[in-house]
Length: 303
Image 1 (cartoon, rainbow, N blue to C red):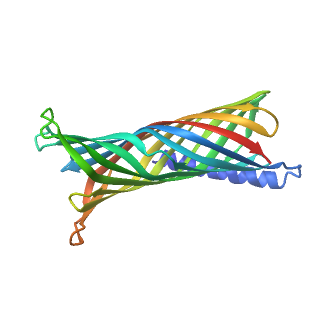
Image 2 (image 1 turned 135 degrees about the horizontal axis):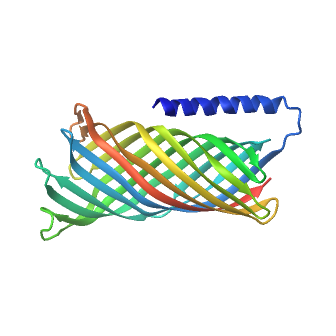
Image 3 (image 1 turned 120 degrees about the vertical axis):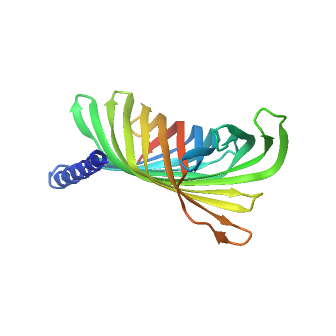
């Protein structure tokens, strides 16, 4: 924790010192705006957990296989400073299946079900401030600090039950669960970037120890809403990109990223929708985890 805070503080001071230097350098500064429309394919799994007296009582694995998104990036540069903002919206309906596992008090698997999953609305917002530091020749180091905000809502419907697992499946119909997650996190990290005559290649890592997540699990047939609050979770993002330069003003970029959010427990409570009664809060009764790969294609226009 202290090391993460030190990294955030160090990068903040570094950006401030560089900015002051640029303001008083007396050199001619370059300005530019880059607009990059594109789309992406996100492939992975969101994990939802319920813990009872410290043991795992339930696990749901929500497929994002894939989640197709479209949107754009807008980047502003002042000298070697860059501010980049991106916003993506999900455009496909079906994202795979959800598998629901339940365990009894002795730790044995007692229930299993599988249902079709569709997304009812998802967006991913990101903004990052970075600086281009010359290293050697065509190589640059690009430290950055950013902020991410995202929301995804998934619906489980139709499918089958196995009570107990391995028994004859029983078909179910209609909507069963609506699950929504909202993520908020600051992050920091850096890239190693190479500028060639026709290509620009980047690779690096971003991380956070300050991930916050609010989740709502609406059990439609039970008429109950479960609310989970996760604080101080971890976040890791491995970033790779290749950009082909058609000209000084037009380029095509291919990005490949891997995101991992380790298991983090949080508090939970529920509201009975039939009478509005709210339960007490159960500490460390909920948990989240996520892992996915994203492939993005962008065409960039420099103005």
